[in-house]
Image 1 (cartoon, rainbow, N blue to C red):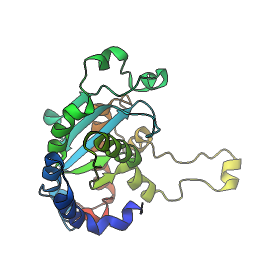
Image 2 (image 1 turned 180 degrees about the horizontal axis):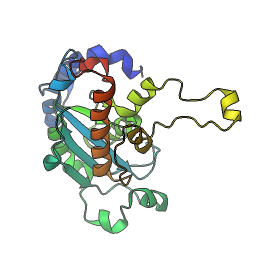
Image 3 (image 1 turned 90 degrees about the vertical axis):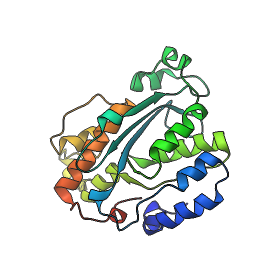
Image 4 (image 1 turned 30 degrees about the vertical axis):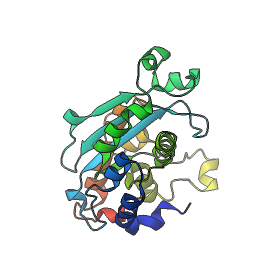
Length: 237
């Protein structure tokens, strides 16, 4: 698979192409949505902060256990339209994952399967640019889950606030001599990235809270380092 940055200018064409290729009506409707072009200013974009919690980090053996979504623009976070869904995964929860996201067997016992909430999820995300922190999780797990349900994968444009921090701090790993004297690498994890913008600390590993934390981080990043008129195509992946 090519690096996402190589496809920055091609998302509009990709979504249009997938609209004609998708077989399932929900996926076809998703790809046919009114997606912004690469030259659309950030200030005109409707974003969707997105976070998934999983039973583990191996996409081959683990599954999504909850999803959080919060719509936003650069000017406003629409907490009133937030959406959170616990999902009953295939297979058992493992103690290590429960320790992180605090979703227990009791929580998932009556929760829907992913296929039961898939169309609602797609309709909420359609036409909006997703905002995540560390895109490999959302990309891989959502693609796998949709393939299991529909036999077709799912890809969409997004902004990755972790990647933005990585680009802003390309020399975050100190030279060997500084490491010898105890200098630590600069962390681009969600909580540490937020602290650089004086954003409040939140409890981690809850899909909705992490989506909110990511939404606030994007607003802070743009306000500090970018122009609201900057084209979204310069940042999306």
